[in-house]
Length: 159
Image (cartoon, rainbow, N blue to C red):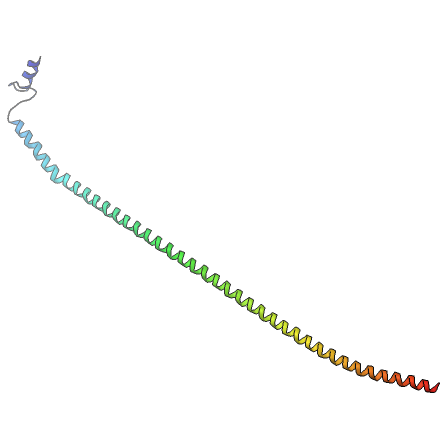
């Protein structure tokens, strides 16, 4: 059977499975010519477009990663600045509270001193008025006692 198959392949009769005549090199030349034409007309432009697309994608990815890195750096920088600003604001608020408390304390001390001085003045005036009232009363008592004495003496002389 092997012989019969080989005989069909390489038979010199025409119309066999493979005819090894001048058409074989022509067919091979046609295939090579078709490969060259397809390569130059179809595959080169397609590969060029694909290469350009790959390059564009690579550049886009590079640019995107640079933008992400820059964004992260800006975010970190702004967070740091925001943190500093918050700290400064808290310090300013605390300083303002402290100053306001000092002002309030000073005002309270001044009011207490003023109140104490007013109380001291009022006490001094009351002391002066008491002294004046006592001296007036002493004068009146002495006048009244003199009058009582005179009335008693005059009544004793009358009786």
